[in-house]
Structure formats: structure tokens, C-alpha cells
Length: 171
Image 1 (cartoon, helix red, strand yellow):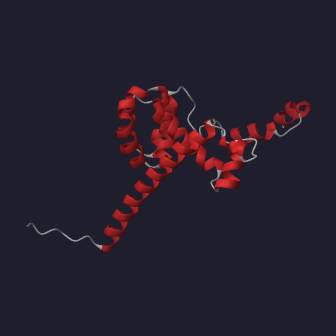
Image 2 (image 1 turned 120 degrees about the vertical axis):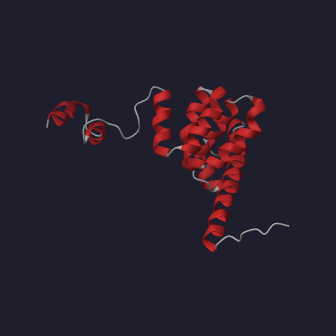
Image 3 (image 1 turned 90 degrees about the vertical axis):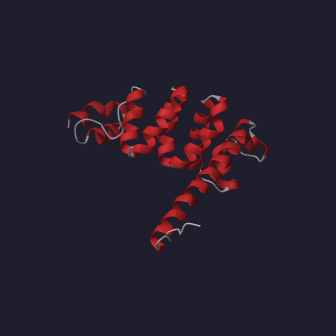
């Protein structure tokens, strides 16, 4: 029997953390799949809630904003060919929540190309992936508002009464 090299403590912890993160992602994807079924069935109404957000936040104990990220991933997985669902679920779980959420719109738009998108996600940074997805969808990249302060000004103008927008923009 060949002798195996023992992992150093930091390597063992790193491996355990990465494996745990993958299991956590898998569990959360399974949870989100169940949540999607619950939302589609409008289960929240049976518990006196007008919509799903307060139901999940108050009754289930999961912030809806967090759940929404995973629901977008679930919707992307549903768009893929049925024969690829199990493999894709495994691959997406390995990517992690952030890259998977960035990837979701591209998977919905180009479901047949999901393996290529997943390979790109594995190899690159979140920023590079976001740029590639935005480009493929014909969107302006996140954080690229143009001149410094342009995004802040645009936000501020949404807070100004309509009759004062021109004056504030001029200043």
C-alpha cells in the first residue's frame, strides 16, 4: 500500500472548508428548489401573507433577498436541458453562490452553452465573469457608470422633485 502524505493542519482545514462550502451550496440549492415550489403554489397565502417576501423573512427565517439569489440560480438550472440537470447542479454547487448568481442570466439565455459558461466561471474571477455575462447579454458592465460621480448624480436626481431635476443637474 503506497504511503500517503499527511496534510498540514492549514491544508486540512482549507480542504474541509471548501468541501463544507460545496455541501452548503448544495443544501441551499435544494432549499431554493423547494422554496420555488412553495412560491409557485402560493403557500405563503395559506399562512396569511400577501406575498412571499415577508413569509420567508418572518416565518421561515430566511431573508428574501438571499433567497432571491438562489431562486435565480434555480431558474437558470431549470432552463438547461433536462438531461443535464444533475451534472449542472453539481457543477453550480462547486462554483459557489456568487459566481453561480452572476452566471444565472447567461445560462437562461444560452442554456445549451452552460458547460462553456461554467468553465469560464471556474477559471476566472467574479469580475471577469460579470463582464463576460454583461457583454453576452448586451448590458453595460456593473460599476462602469462613465465619468466619476455619474452614478451618484443619477441616484440623487431620482430623489429630487421632478420640477427641480433640471436645476439640480445643472448645478
